Length: 515
Image (tube, rainbow, N blue to C red):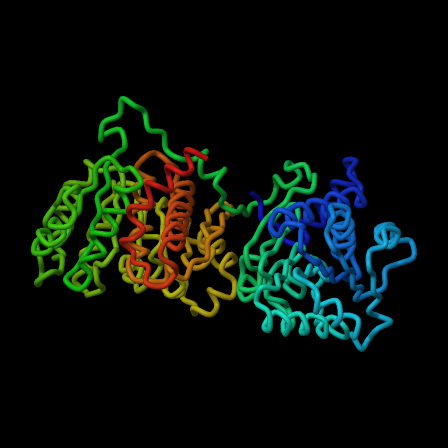
C-alpha cells in the first residue's frame, strides 16, 4: 500500500478528474467510505455523533459522512467551525434532512457547542485534512480544547479523525498544540506520510485506510509503501513438501561475548524461527556450551579467544575458511566493541567472497569508527541500526535522525549502497534505488534488550531462503512487528521479553498463510 505526501495526493486527485472521476464524486465516495468505517467501529444504536466541520474538502467529506450516518438511523449533529458557501451541495443535503446544524461562526461563545458536546458519544474531527497547515486560531482551538476537556472527564467519549487529526502536517508529522488525540483515524485513499512520523503519530490512535475509488495505478510512481498482510503473504518463502534442510539454506551467525551471551541465542533462534534450514553459531569457545545448553537446534563453530569470552582476531581465518558452506553471514549481535573485536571484523571483512551479509549492533558501532567504512564492504548488505547507531554511522545526532527518519534512511541507503533498516516505532526500510517501506507497528513492548537480535536473525533467515535484500529486510521487520503485536495482545506492552517473540514468529507466518 502506497504512502503519499500531500502533494502526491493532490496530483492523484487531479489525475482522477482527468480520467473521469471528478472531485464531487471523490468527496461522495470519501464521506460514505468514512461513514461505513465509523459504523463498523462504533455501531449506530445509542450513539450520538457530533461532526466538527471545517472550511475545505475535509469539511465537505465530513458533511457527506454526517448525511450517511443520519440515513442509517444514527443521531447526528453538525457544528460548523467555518461557514460553507451557499453553493455547497453537501451542506444543503444535510440541512434538507433536518440534521441539527449549528453555525459556530454565529455562536462564538460556543454555548450551543457545549450543549451538543454534553450529549455526544462520538466526535468526528473533520476540520482540516491534507491542506497547508497553519496555526489553529479562533474557534478551532476553542472547540478542540473543549473536546479534550470532555474526553478527560469521560474517557468513553471517542474521537475519530477524518483523514488526519486536525493540525497534523501530512508530510512531516508536526502538530499544532491543539491537535486532538484521536482514538481512531480513518484516512482516505492512501495513508499519509505524517501519520507515521512523531510527534503526530502519537495523536493518530488506531489507523484505518479506506478506499475512495481512486484507481491504484495512479500511485504507481510513489516509492514509499506501507507494509501490510497482503504484501507479506505474497512474499513469504515457498515451503515445498519434498524439502530438506538444504532447501532452506544455511546461516552463519558470528555473535556473542562474555557480557552479551543472550544476543547469540536470540539471533540464532530468530533465524531458525522464520524457517532457515540450518544455523551455525560461531562464538568464543568458552561461551559455546552455555548457549548450547539452551539452543539445541543450532550447530556450532567454537572460536579461539583473546581473553575469556572474547573472540580472538585470529579467529577470522577460521571463519573465512568456513564461509563457503553458508548462504548468509550475520554478525554484530553482542560481539562487544573491544579493539580486538574490531581487528577480528576488519580481517573478516577483508575476505572478497563473503556470503550475503547482515550487520547489526556492535558490527555497526565498530564500522562507524572507520573512515569511509561503507567503501570497505561488498556492495550488498543489510544494515539494521537503531537511531543511536544510525547517528554514529551517518556522523550525525540522534535528534537529526529522529526528526527525519525516512529522509535520513533514504539518503544513507543511497550513499552507502546498502539496504538500511532504521529501527524504532514505524521502522523504516530503504533501498539504494530510492524505494522505502514503513512498518505499521509502533509497540513500546519491543523497546527492550534483545528484540533487535531477534530481528537481525529473522532477516538473515529470510535472506537465506532466497528473498532479495529489500524483501528479506522488510518481511523480517513485518513478521517481527506482527509477533510483537501478538505478544502484546497476550501480555500487554510492559514486561515483554525478546524471547517471547520467538514462538510467535512461526505463528505470524501461519496467520499470514491462512489469511
